[in-house]
Structures are given as structure tokens and as C-alpha cells.
Image 1 (tube, rainbow, N blue to C red):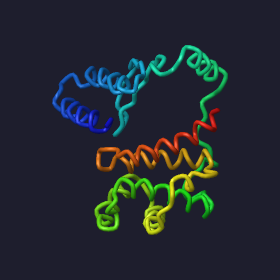
Image 2 (cartoon, rainbow, N blue to C red):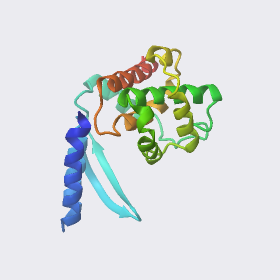
Image 3 (cartoon, rainbow, N blue to C red):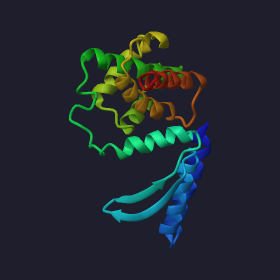
Length: 202
């Protein structure tokens, strides 16, 4: 899978940066390479450090999977709109209704379950990884409770709101990659979540 192919390469490049005198020029090349794995044409135009972060400016060309017509539309949309910071109404777990939180918990529990059939025996090992992924204690406890009640995937995504699907998908990818591989069932779950987003676009 993608993680198995890319992560060892990224790790090797990180080690290279720690040893390189010309780390800046090497990182410029690496960033372009990393985006290139996704079919994105990108050129670094500026690179600097700010505190504990690296600030990068990019010039991005049309991705391989994007048609000329789609790219023109994207450019037109960007030209006619101004970048906006995330609003206070952006969906977050604490802002969700109890019903939405329950749906999120059950979906994430499904992803964990299909990737870890022996989850009841390995929860103590998995729980710290959930916190490492940035999941709150409330969410982790909700997922643990949801793991006790298996549910069919089709039932879980029935009437799923696109905004919730986007939230779950961002977390589910990290969950699926905890063991650095994606099983067929995990892949099916991720695709199902993505299809909900596609419906919003279409």
C-alpha cells in the first residue's frame, strides 16, 4: 500500500536532511517529490524557518488526475474568491450533537474493528495510538463503547451528512494506517466515506 511504499522513503530522506549541509536545497527537491507521488506538479518558490516550523511557498500545476477543463474551473473559482480562515462554526467533535457524535464513534469503531479483528484483546495497545492521533479522551471512550456493538457499514453511512463524512474520513485514514497497511475492509470503509463526499460535489 501507499504507506508501505512512501513512509520508508520519507524516513530515509529525513535522516538525509539531518546530515546534509545544504539541507535547504535538498528539502526543496524533496517537497516536490512528495507531492509528485500524488501526481501534483509543484515547485517550491520560497523556504524559511519560523520558530519550530518550516514555512514553504509553492507554485502548483495541474495534477495528473485533473482534466484541463477541471483545472480551468478551479483557477476561475480561486480567482473569484478570497481565502477564508476556518470559521467558528466549523464542525468539531465538541460542537456535534450527541447523535452526530454517536455516528462518528460508530464509524471510527468500524474502521478499527475491520483492521483489528482481535480488538478486544489489543485495546490496551491501540488506545495510546488513538491519543497520539489527536483524538480526545471523550472520543476515545465513545469509540470504545461503540466497539461493543458491531454495525453494518451500509447502515452506518445511511443518511450520513457530508460534513460528518469529511470529519470521519480525516480520522479514519490515520486509524487505518496505524499498522502501516490498509486491509481490503478498511479500504472499503474509506471508499464508502469518500463516496458521500462525492455526492456532495455532484
